[in-house]
Amino acid sequence: MAKTIGILTAGGDSPGLNAAIRGVGKAAIGAYGMHVVGFRDGFRGLMENRGSSLSPSDLSGILTIGGTILGTSRDKPNRMPVGKKTMDMTDAIVATYHNHHLDGLVCLGGGGTQKNAFHLLQNSLNVITLPKTIDNDVALTDITLGFDTALGIATDAIDRLHSTAHSHHRIIVVEVMGHNAGWLALGAGIAGGADVILIPEIPYDIEAVAEAIRHRSRTGSRFSIVAVSEGSMSRAQAETLQQAQALVDQAKGSKKRTRRSVEKAKAAKAKFSEIKEQVGNSTLQLSQELEQLTGLESRVTILGHLQRGGTPSAADRLLATRLGTACAGLVNQGMFGVMVATRGDGTEPVPLEDVVDKRKTVPLDHPWIQSARDIGVCLGDA
Ligand code: F6P
Image (cartoon, rainbow, N blue to C red):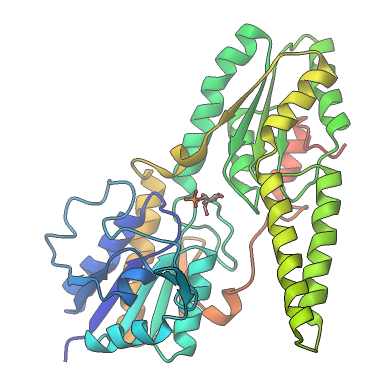
Protein backbone atom coordinates (compact mmCIF):
# COMPACT_ATOMS: atom_id res chain seq x y z
CA MET A 1 0.00 0.00 0.00
CA ALA A 2 1.21 3.55 -0.73
CA LYS A 3 2.83 5.24 2.24
CA THR A 4 1.60 8.54 3.70
CA ILE A 5 4.09 10.97 5.16
CA GLY A 6 3.70 14.24 7.03
CA ILE A 7 6.10 17.15 6.64
CA LEU A 8 6.64 20.28 8.72
CA THR A 9 9.14 23.12 9.13
CA ALA A 10 10.01 24.31 12.65
CA GLY A 11 12.25 26.90 14.31
CA GLY A 12 13.48 30.03 12.55
CA ASP A 13 12.86 30.25 8.82
CA SER A 14 15.85 29.70 6.60
CA PRO A 15 16.57 30.03 2.88
CA GLY A 16 16.15 26.71 1.08
CA LEU A 17 13.25 25.35 3.17
CA ASN A 18 10.87 25.41 0.21
CA ALA A 19 13.47 23.77 -1.98
CA ALA A 20 13.76 21.01 0.65
CA ILE A 21 9.96 20.59 0.93
CA ARG A 22 9.92 20.31 -2.86
CA GLY A 23 12.79 17.79 -2.84
CA VAL A 24 11.11 15.55 -0.26
CA GLY A 25 7.67 15.91 -1.83
CA LYS A 26 8.58 15.45 -5.48
CA ALA A 27 10.67 12.36 -4.75
CA ALA A 28 8.12 10.93 -2.31
CA ILE A 29 5.25 11.34 -4.80
CA GLY A 30 7.08 10.90 -8.11
CA ALA A 31 9.69 8.28 -7.33
CA TYR A 32 7.96 6.30 -4.56
CA GLY A 33 4.22 6.88 -5.06
CA MET A 34 3.63 8.24 -1.56
CA HIS A 35 0.98 10.62 -0.33
CA VAL A 36 2.32 13.79 1.38
CA VAL A 37 0.56 15.87 4.04
CA GLY A 38 1.98 19.31 4.90
CA PHE A 39 1.42 20.59 8.45
CA ARG A 40 1.26 24.33 9.13
CA ASP A 41 3.46 26.28 11.55
CA GLY A 42 5.69 23.54 12.88
CA PHE A 43 4.63 21.33 15.77
CA ARG A 44 1.73 23.67 16.56
CA GLY A 45 0.00 22.73 13.30
CA LEU A 46 0.44 19.09 14.15
CA MET A 47 -1.07 19.69 17.58
CA GLU A 48 -4.00 21.64 16.10
CA ASN A 49 -4.45 19.17 13.24
CA ARG A 50 -3.80 21.76 10.56
CA GLY A 51 -2.57 19.52 7.78
CA SER A 52 -3.47 19.30 4.13
CA SER A 53 -2.45 17.17 1.23
CA LEU A 54 0.45 18.45 -0.91
CA SER A 55 0.00 17.76 -4.61
CA PRO A 56 2.70 18.05 -7.30
CA SER A 57 1.27 21.46 -8.26
CA ASP A 58 1.69 22.68 -4.64
CA LEU A 59 5.35 21.76 -4.94
CA SER A 60 5.80 23.52 -8.23
CA GLY A 61 7.28 27.03 -8.47
CA ILE A 62 8.61 27.14 -4.91
CA LEU A 63 12.27 26.27 -5.49
CA THR A 64 13.49 29.87 -5.44
CA ILE A 65 11.09 31.29 -2.86
CA GLY A 66 12.40 32.31 0.58
CA GLY A 67 10.75 31.37 3.90
CA THR A 68 8.53 28.32 4.06
CA ILE A 69 5.18 27.71 2.35
CA LEU A 70 4.19 25.66 5.40
CA GLY A 71 4.86 28.43 7.94
CA THR A 72 6.91 27.80 11.04
CA SER A 73 6.96 28.33 14.80
CA ARG A 74 9.26 27.69 17.71
CA ASP A 75 6.60 25.69 19.59
CA LYS A 76 7.71 22.55 21.43
CA PRO A 77 5.39 19.51 21.67
CA ASN A 78 5.95 19.07 25.40
CA ARG A 79 5.87 22.75 26.42
CA MET A 80 3.39 24.57 24.22
CA PRO A 81 1.60 27.79 25.13
CA VAL A 82 -2.13 27.06 24.98
CA GLY A 83 -4.29 29.99 26.09
CA LYS A 84 -2.58 31.34 29.19
CA LYS A 85 -0.97 28.01 30.09
CA THR A 86 2.06 26.10 28.89
CA MET A 87 1.08 22.47 28.37
CA ASP A 88 2.46 19.14 27.26
CA MET A 89 0.62 18.59 23.96
CA THR A 90 2.41 15.40 22.94
CA ASP A 91 -0.78 13.31 23.10
CA ALA A 92 -2.62 15.67 20.74
CA ILE A 93 0.29 15.45 18.28
CA VAL A 94 0.35 11.65 18.48
CA ALA A 95 -3.41 11.64 17.84
CA THR A 96 -3.06 13.84 14.72
CA TYR A 97 -0.30 11.57 13.42
CA HIS A 98 -2.57 8.54 13.72
CA ASN A 99 -5.68 10.34 12.42
CA HIS A 100 -3.82 10.99 9.18
CA HIS A 101 -2.57 7.38 9.13
CA LEU A 102 0.97 8.65 8.75
CA ASP A 103 3.76 6.17 8.15
CA GLY A 104 6.34 8.80 8.98
CA LEU A 105 6.90 12.46 9.77
CA VAL A 106 9.63 14.61 8.18
CA CYS A 107 10.74 17.52 10.39
CA LEU A 108 12.92 20.27 8.91
CA GLY A 109 14.70 22.34 11.52
CA GLY A 110 17.70 23.28 13.63
CA GLY A 111 18.94 22.04 16.98
CA GLY A 112 15.64 22.62 18.80
CA THR A 113 13.69 20.76 16.11
CA GLN A 114 16.04 17.76 16.33
CA LYS A 115 15.27 17.63 20.05
CA ASN A 116 11.51 17.97 19.54
CA ALA A 117 11.55 15.29 16.85
CA PHE A 118 13.50 13.00 19.17
CA HIS A 119 10.83 13.54 21.80
CA LEU A 120 8.21 12.33 19.30
CA LEU A 121 10.41 9.36 18.41
CA GLN A 122 10.41 8.45 22.11
CA ASN A 123 6.62 8.59 21.88
CA SER A 124 6.73 5.94 19.16
CA LEU A 125 6.29 8.16 16.10
CA ASN A 126 8.36 7.44 12.99
CA VAL A 127 10.30 10.67 12.58
CA ILE A 128 13.09 11.68 10.27
CA THR A 129 14.74 15.11 10.18
CA LEU A 130 16.72 17.43 7.94
CA PRO A 131 19.26 19.92 9.40
CA LYS A 132 18.40 23.55 8.73
CA THR A 133 19.72 26.78 10.25
CA ILE A 134 21.73 29.71 9.01
CA ASP A 135 23.86 29.32 12.16
CA ASN A 136 25.30 26.02 10.83
CA ASP A 137 25.47 24.72 14.41
CA VAL A 138 23.63 21.38 14.18
CA ALA A 139 25.87 18.53 15.34
CA LEU A 140 27.05 15.69 13.10
CA THR A 141 26.35 17.28 9.74
CA ASP A 142 28.99 18.94 7.56
CA ILE A 143 26.68 21.86 6.78
CA THR A 144 23.11 22.98 7.40
CA LEU A 145 20.56 24.24 4.95
CA GLY A 146 20.45 28.05 4.73
CA PHE A 147 24.01 28.67 5.83
CA ASP A 148 25.39 29.28 2.35
CA THR A 149 22.74 31.86 1.48
CA ALA A 150 23.19 33.73 4.77
CA LEU A 151 26.95 33.63 4.25
CA GLY A 152 26.48 35.32 0.87
CA ILE A 153 24.16 37.98 2.29
CA ALA A 154 26.47 38.79 5.22
CA THR A 155 29.51 38.90 2.94
CA ASP A 156 27.74 41.23 0.52
CA ALA A 157 26.82 43.50 3.46
CA ILE A 158 30.44 43.64 4.64
CA ASP A 159 31.55 44.46 1.09
CA ARG A 160 29.12 47.37 0.99
CA LEU A 161 30.02 48.61 4.47
CA HIS A 162 33.61 49.03 3.34
CA SER A 163 32.52 52.09 1.32
CA THR A 164 31.45 54.10 4.35
CA ALA A 165 34.23 52.72 6.53
CA HIS A 166 37.03 53.91 4.29
CA SER A 167 35.35 57.12 3.08
CA HIS A 168 34.66 58.36 6.63
CA HIS A 169 37.71 56.72 8.27
CA ARG A 170 35.41 54.92 10.66
CA ILE A 171 35.12 51.68 12.53
CA ILE A 172 32.09 49.75 11.32
CA VAL A 173 30.90 47.08 13.70
CA VAL A 174 28.67 44.67 11.78
CA GLU A 175 26.63 42.20 13.82
CA VAL A 176 26.01 38.87 12.17
CA MET A 177 23.56 36.21 13.44
CA GLY A 178 24.85 33.26 15.47
CA HIS A 179 23.85 33.25 19.11
CA ASN A 180 26.01 30.27 20.08
CA ALA A 181 28.30 29.56 17.14
CA GLY A 182 30.51 31.81 15.06
CA TRP A 183 30.39 30.07 11.67
CA LEU A 184 28.54 32.88 9.94
CA ALA A 185 30.63 35.76 11.34
CA LEU A 186 33.86 33.88 10.74
CA GLY A 187 32.96 32.80 7.20
CA ALA A 188 31.52 36.17 6.14
CA GLY A 189 34.27 38.03 7.98
CA ILE A 190 36.96 36.17 6.06
CA ALA A 191 35.11 36.35 2.73
CA GLY A 192 34.31 40.05 3.20
CA GLY A 193 37.78 41.01 4.37
CA ALA A 194 36.87 42.08 7.93
CA ASP A 195 39.82 43.28 10.00
CA VAL A 196 38.49 41.95 13.29
CA ILE A 197 36.21 38.91 13.71
CA LEU A 198 34.63 38.18 17.08
CA ILE A 199 32.87 34.86 17.67
CA PRO A 200 31.31 33.25 20.77
CA GLU A 201 33.97 30.54 20.83
CA ILE A 202 36.75 33.10 21.48
CA PRO A 203 35.89 35.57 24.25
CA TYR A 204 37.57 38.84 23.35
CA ASP A 205 39.87 41.23 25.14
CA ILE A 206 38.61 44.70 24.24
CA GLU A 207 42.10 46.18 24.61
CA ALA A 208 43.48 43.66 22.08
CA VAL A 209 40.74 44.59 19.60
CA ALA A 210 41.38 48.31 20.10
CA GLU A 211 45.12 47.83 19.66
CA ALA A 212 44.58 45.95 16.37
CA ILE A 213 42.49 48.89 15.11
CA ARG A 214 45.01 51.48 16.35
CA HIS A 215 47.80 49.53 14.66
CA ARG A 216 45.90 49.69 11.36
CA SER A 217 45.49 53.46 11.79
CA ARG A 218 49.20 53.93 12.53
CA THR A 219 50.10 51.97 9.41
CA GLY A 220 47.84 53.96 7.10
CA SER A 221 44.48 52.14 7.20
CA ARG A 222 42.29 54.62 9.03
CA PHE A 223 39.20 52.42 8.98
CA SER A 224 38.36 48.96 10.30
CA ILE A 225 35.54 46.49 9.83
CA VAL A 226 34.65 44.45 12.89
CA ALA A 227 32.43 41.41 12.13
CA VAL A 228 30.84 40.23 15.34
CA SER A 229 28.56 37.27 16.05
CA GLU A 230 25.51 38.28 18.06
CA GLY A 231 26.60 35.76 20.73
CA SER A 232 30.22 36.86 21.02
CA MET A 233 31.33 38.12 24.43
CA SER A 234 34.13 39.80 26.28
CA ARG A 235 36.30 37.80 28.64
CA ALA A 236 34.52 39.32 31.64
CA GLN A 237 31.10 38.40 30.18
CA ALA A 238 32.33 34.87 29.49
CA GLU A 239 33.39 34.49 33.10
CA THR A 240 30.04 35.70 34.43
CA LEU A 241 28.24 33.37 32.05
CA GLN A 242 30.38 30.45 33.17
CA GLN A 243 29.54 31.15 36.80
CA ALA A 244 25.84 31.27 35.97
CA GLN A 245 26.14 27.99 34.03
CA ALA A 246 27.87 26.38 37.04
CA LEU A 247 24.90 27.33 39.22
CA VAL A 248 22.47 25.85 36.68
CA ASP A 249 24.50 22.61 36.56
CA GLN A 250 24.68 22.50 40.33
CA ALA A 251 20.92 22.91 40.62
CA LYS A 252 20.38 20.21 37.99
CA GLY A 253 22.72 17.83 39.83
CA SER A 254 20.97 18.28 43.16
CA LYS A 255 19.38 14.92 44.07
CA LYS A 256 16.73 16.19 46.48
CA ARG A 257 13.75 17.81 44.76
CA THR A 258 12.42 20.07 47.46
CA ARG A 259 10.45 23.24 46.86
CA ARG A 260 13.58 25.20 47.73
CA SER A 261 15.76 23.29 45.25
CA VAL A 262 13.20 23.78 42.45
CA GLU A 263 13.10 27.51 43.17
CA LYS A 264 16.89 27.65 43.25
CA ALA A 265 17.06 25.89 39.87
CA LYS A 266 14.51 28.34 38.42
CA ALA A 267 16.46 31.32 39.73
CA ALA A 268 19.74 29.94 38.34
CA LYS A 269 18.15 29.42 34.91
CA ALA A 270 16.64 32.91 34.95
CA LYS A 271 20.02 34.45 35.84
CA PHE A 272 21.70 32.51 33.03
CA SER A 273 19.09 33.68 30.49
CA GLU A 274 19.43 37.27 31.71
CA ILE A 275 23.20 37.25 31.17
CA LYS A 276 22.78 35.54 27.79
CA GLU A 277 20.39 38.29 26.75
CA GLN A 278 22.80 40.99 27.89
CA VAL A 279 25.54 39.31 25.85
CA GLY A 280 23.24 39.20 22.83
CA ASN A 281 22.60 42.93 23.11
CA SER A 282 26.11 44.20 23.68
CA THR A 283 27.21 45.13 20.16
CA LEU A 284 26.38 48.81 20.67
CA GLN A 285 28.41 48.82 23.86
CA LEU A 286 31.32 47.19 22.01
CA SER A 287 31.18 49.90 19.37
CA GLN A 288 31.13 52.67 22.01
CA GLU A 289 34.08 51.15 23.84
CA LEU A 290 36.08 50.91 20.63
CA GLU A 291 35.31 54.54 19.83
CA GLN A 292 36.63 55.59 23.24
CA LEU A 293 39.72 53.38 23.10
CA THR A 294 40.77 54.28 19.54
CA GLY A 295 39.55 57.83 19.09
CA LEU A 296 37.95 56.77 15.79
CA GLU A 297 34.27 57.25 15.03
CA SER A 298 32.36 53.97 15.18
CA ARG A 299 29.00 52.88 13.73
CA VAL A 300 26.95 49.71 14.19
CA THR A 301 25.03 47.75 11.54
CA ILE A 302 22.90 44.86 12.74
CA LEU A 303 22.10 42.55 9.83
CA GLY A 304 19.40 40.62 11.73
CA HIS A 305 16.71 38.78 9.81
CA LEU A 306 17.92 40.11 6.45
CA GLN A 307 20.29 37.15 6.62
CA ARG A 308 17.42 34.65 6.66
CA GLY A 309 15.41 36.18 3.87
CA GLY A 310 15.08 36.00 0.12
CA THR A 311 16.11 33.68 -2.63
CA PRO A 312 18.25 30.70 -1.58
CA SER A 313 21.68 30.41 -3.20
CA ALA A 314 22.35 27.78 -5.84
CA ALA A 315 24.37 25.80 -3.26
CA ASP A 316 21.43 25.80 -0.83
CA ARG A 317 18.95 24.74 -3.53
CA LEU A 318 21.25 21.92 -4.49
CA LEU A 319 21.76 20.89 -0.86
CA ALA A 320 18.01 21.07 -0.17
CA THR A 321 17.29 18.84 -3.15
CA ARG A 322 20.01 16.35 -2.19
CA LEU A 323 18.80 16.17 1.42
CA GLY A 324 15.13 16.08 0.48
CA THR A 325 15.44 13.30 -2.06
CA ALA A 326 17.73 11.27 0.24
CA CYS A 327 15.14 11.67 2.96
CA ALA A 328 12.34 10.37 0.73
CA GLY A 329 14.52 7.38 -0.15
CA LEU A 330 15.14 6.57 3.51
CA VAL A 331 11.42 6.87 4.30
CA ASN A 332 10.73 4.46 1.45
CA GLN A 333 13.18 2.00 3.03
CA GLY A 334 11.41 2.45 6.37
CA MET A 335 14.37 4.09 8.07
CA PHE A 336 13.34 6.47 10.86
CA GLY A 337 14.81 7.94 14.04
CA VAL A 338 17.58 9.59 12.05
CA MET A 339 18.69 12.98 10.79
CA VAL A 340 19.76 13.06 7.16
CA ALA A 341 23.21 14.66 7.51
CA THR A 342 25.39 16.08 4.74
CA ARG A 343 28.65 14.26 4.32
CA GLY A 344 30.89 15.61 1.56
CA ASP A 345 28.99 15.26 -1.70
CA GLY A 346 26.70 12.66 -0.18
CA THR A 347 24.29 12.28 2.71
CA GLU A 348 24.30 10.00 5.73
CA PRO A 349 21.58 9.02 8.20
CA VAL A 350 22.75 9.65 11.78
CA PRO A 351 20.75 8.50 14.83
CA LEU A 352 18.76 11.37 16.32
CA GLU A 353 19.84 10.41 19.81
CA ASP A 354 23.44 11.24 18.80
CA VAL A 355 22.42 14.66 17.49
CA VAL A 356 20.25 16.02 20.32
CA ASP A 357 21.66 18.23 23.06
CA LYS A 358 24.84 18.79 21.08
CA ARG A 359 25.96 21.86 19.19
CA LYS A 360 28.55 22.21 16.45
CA THR A 361 30.60 25.23 17.45
CA VAL A 362 33.76 26.39 15.67
CA PRO A 363 36.71 24.29 16.93
CA LEU A 364 39.59 26.51 17.97
CA ASP A 365 41.92 24.60 15.66
CA HIS A 366 39.56 24.87 12.68
CA PRO A 367 41.31 25.74 9.38
CA TRP A 368 39.15 28.87 8.95
CA ILE A 369 40.54 30.22 12.24
CA GLN A 370 44.09 29.51 11.11
CA SER A 371 43.47 31.16 7.73
CA ALA A 372 42.05 34.25 9.43
CA ARG A 373 45.07 34.52 11.71
CA ASP A 374 47.46 33.95 8.80
CA ILE A 375 46.09 36.95 6.91
CA GLY A 376 46.36 39.14 10.01
CA VAL A 377 42.74 39.22 11.16
CA CYS A 378 42.37 40.00 14.87
CA LEU A 379 40.16 37.43 16.59
CA GLY A 380 40.10 39.37 19.83
CA ASP A 381 42.41 37.12 21.79
CA ALA A 382 45.89 38.35 20.94
O1 F6P B 1 18.60 30.05 14.76
C1 F6P B 1 18.92 30.98 13.80
C2 F6P B 1 18.82 32.36 14.32
O2 F6P B 1 18.90 33.07 13.14
C3 F6P B 1 19.84 32.86 15.35
O3 F6P B 1 21.07 33.22 14.85
C4 F6P B 1 19.12 34.01 15.99
O4 F6P B 1 19.58 34.32 17.25
C5 F6P B 1 17.74 33.53 16.02
O5 F6P B 1 17.58 32.64 14.93
C6 F6P B 1 16.71 34.62 16.04
O6 F6P B 1 15.50 34.18 15.56
P1 F6P B 1 14.08 34.81 15.84
O7 F6P B 1 14.28 36.27 16.05
O8 F6P B 1 13.30 34.52 14.61
O9 F6P B 1 13.53 34.12 17.02
